[in-house]
Length: 313
Image (cartoon, rainbow, N blue to C red; front, side, top):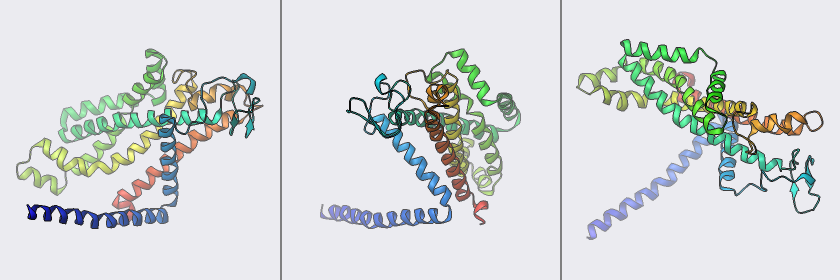
């Protein structure tokens, strides 16, 4: 019993000794990232900030006011103005229906971020598995899969998404499933190229020589070696999903009123009052641009770090 207690105590002490070292390594890596990839680090900070805002909007902690409540008496208020009754303060003003712009932007971040994350969580794993199996199997199976992917990619992504949502009917969920399914071909194509290169390496031949099954070689040996392009590709899919969701909402077939969506805000009061109150269009437009730009730049920085050839090694 005493020996067992001594073993547990030693293990706990070892974990406590390792924890500061682990934190120190993370701090050193973060400092290196900011020093060598400043644009990527700033973009990562902006992306994480928008993600945090989306989570806060989902919990309701950081939304100052009801984003869909109409206050006609305070319509088209400017920046940093107080309501007529004196019970509210509008940091970014109000729209044509008197709704708080800051609250609507925060809730719009929730829709865009969750939409993009959901699309990535569906399209990246499914597309990665399709590309992995297609490249490893080869032959007629690979030929058929790639021709199907080519057929899908011949039609512009947004045009095909609009066509599918028009058939299914307007709505955020219809747009989500359409974009998620249409985002599968690109990861499948990218991962297929990586797998074609990886499966010819010496370690894959060694695993095949000692009698490893095809499933084990694919998922235990090849897949971990193509995770880097999948991670980088996820940032690209995130950005495309944000733009597509905003485009569908802008056209009126995505998020439906009164749901606060950045794209819907552009086509609603932003378009009607652009000449007299341009902030109604600039604010959601800037939010979309910042999220897409920061996600893309963060993905480029990740690609430079994860690819040894781009590190010069």
